[in-house]
Length: 292
Length: 292
Image (tube, rainbow over all chains, first blue to last red; front, side, top):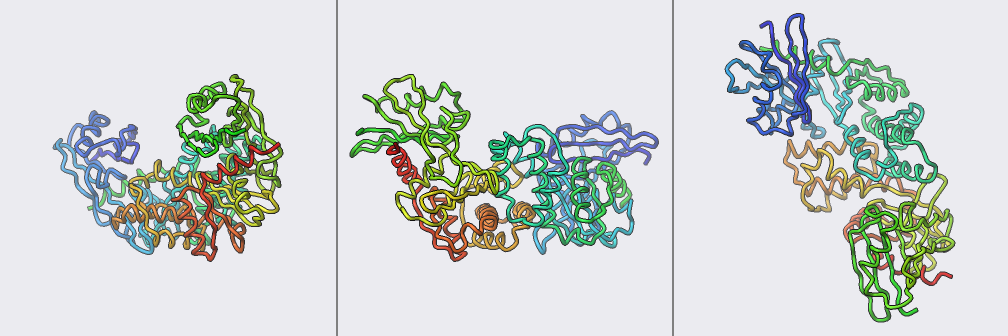
C-alpha cells in the first residue's frame, strides 16, 4: 500500500491528509460530524478527497466520526488499555475502492466516568515519539485531557472543560463586553494561575471582578482575557495536581494553548516536553494503519 | 402624593407597579435596558404606563436603567454606604407631568472591584423589614450578590456569576445534550454542594463527568442539572464562606433559586430568613420615594 488517507474528523471540522511516498497534502473542511447525518459521511469525504483516489485505498479515521451519531460507531475501549484499543471498526462503504477503518475512543468507568475520541490517537502518536513514556500526556483544547500513560497503555484519564468554558464565557456572558479582542499578557495570566491554585474556591466569585474592574478602572480587555485564562487553567491545575506534580509531562495541543499550559506548569516547577498536535495525530493514525 | 409608580428596569425586562392607595397593579415588558437607546426610555415607559398618569406623577426607578447606557446615569455610591446612597438622580423628562428619579447603584473599590444596580434597592427593602439587621443579605440570581449589612449600611459585597454560568453551561456547551428539561432532585444537589465545598478545586473537571455519565450510564438529565447546580452553588459557598459562616443570613430571590440556596445553606447549619424579591424591591422603592 503506497497511498492511504489519514482522517481527523471531529465535531466541527474534517481534516484529511494524503499519505503518499514523498508527498503529504492536507485538506480541511468545516463539515464536522455534528453537521452530518450518517449517510452524508461518505459523500462528504469523497467531495473533499475523491480526486486522490485511483484504486483501492485505505482510510484511517479518528475523532467523533466514531461516535454513535458518526459514520459508524467504533465502540470505546475501556482503560487501562493501549491507546488504540483492541482493533479498528470497519465501515461498509458504497464505493468499493474504499477500505475505511475508524479508531475506537477510550472510556473510563471508575473512579469517575470519562470518555475521549481523537485524543487516544494523539497519545498513540506520542508513544511513537517516546516509546517508554511513564508519565502524563496533557492534551489541552476545548476539552483538555490528562492521561496517565505507562507501559504503552492509558492507565486512567481526566477531562477538564477549560477551553469550552473560556470560549463560552467570552462569547455568551456579560463578561464578553470586557473580554474583546485576542490580546495576551503573561504576567497577569501567571498571577491568576497562582491565585487559582492557592485559592481554587474563589473562581466563580473572581469572574465578576473582570466586569467590575472594566467598569470602575477601565481594565484593558487583554488583561482581563489573560486573567480569565489564568483563573481557568489555574483551577484545572488545582484539580489535576496529582496528574502533574512530580511527573514527566508531555503537552500536545495547538501552539497558543500549549504555550499557556507550558507557562503555567513551568511556574509550578514542571518542565513539560512539547509535541505538536497535528504531527502526533498523523503519527497515531500511522500507527493505527499498521494494526492487524 | 397619592399615586406614584415603582419601576424595576433591568437589563432584559421592565417591571412597573402602580402604587395607589388601595390599588396595586404591576405590568411587565421585555423592553429591557439593553434593547433601548437613551431617547427610547421615556416613550417605552409611557407606552407601558401612560394610562395610569392623570397629573403630576413621581416615578422611582432602580436597576440597569441607571447605568451609563441607561435612561440617565445615576452615579454609584461607594461602600460603606446606605443602600440608597446619598441621593437619587433626576431625569429630565419631555412629558412635564413626570418627576422621574433613579436610585444609584453601589460600587466597591477595595478589597476587590465590584458593582451592583438594583440589588441595593432590595437591601433597602430588607432593612425596612429587619431594621437592625447585622448580618448578610444573599440575593441569588444571574449575578448573586452577598452583602454585609450593619448599622443600616452596606459595608462590603461580593458578586458570584453562578446563575449566569449555570444558564450558559446549559445552553451553550456540550453539556446541553445532557441537561435538558427542568427537573430537580434534592439529594444529588446536596451531595454536589457538599463535594464542591470540600473539594472546590475539582469544579472544572467535575463538569465533563456530567457528559460522560450520560454517555456511559444514561444518567437522567434532572440528576445532571441538580448536580451542576450543586457544584456551582457549592463553589460559590466555598468562595463566600466568611460571608455566611456564623452570620445571620437573609435570602431574597425568586422562589426556585431561593429554595436551592436555602437548602444548601441549611445543610451547612445556617438557618436563613427568606424574604420575597419582588416585595423587597417595592419596599426599597417605597423607601427611596420618601428620601428628601
